[in-house]
Length: 116
Length: 113
Figure (cartoon, rainbow over the protein chains, first blue to last red):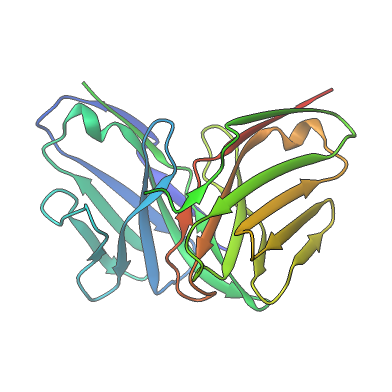
């Protein structure tokens, strides 16, 4: 298993500003993932963050808007840049592990972002 | 296009009875499926998974059924307990180990005492 913490847990921001969300894992993992859950929507994968390489972004998400850092095997940050009210969401990081013959993704508690 | 669908946004069940949560998918290439439970202010927690080589997987009170021909899976909780009240997400991937999961929109289960 993996224990994941995120900072901040929530924030209210003004449009046009940027917010950096931190994700800390209690063990070393190769791949970390960032998801977004907009109100009433499903969890949508933003990008996959590998240590030592550029993040891989999903369709509809770009590095300029959501820059990601992965400085080591236990930590990652996601920045939401030049925010607008449409960015109001819960942002979650997760890690993937292999145990007992199947994959399991562990999620952090999420960061609830409100953009005014 | 929503590839994984949970058509019931909410469900209420009496304590002790069976809860059945449904999930449909459109991509026939999906062959690994998971269920997650999410409490408010917490991240989703893995419950149970199933691969396409099975049609049923059981873990305690939780059983997942997969009908590949119908592209349908369901989660059964028996007996339901008030602590099961949460939002349940199904997710699908192309195979165990591909890491990329497509999530449904969730079903809010309320178990009434």
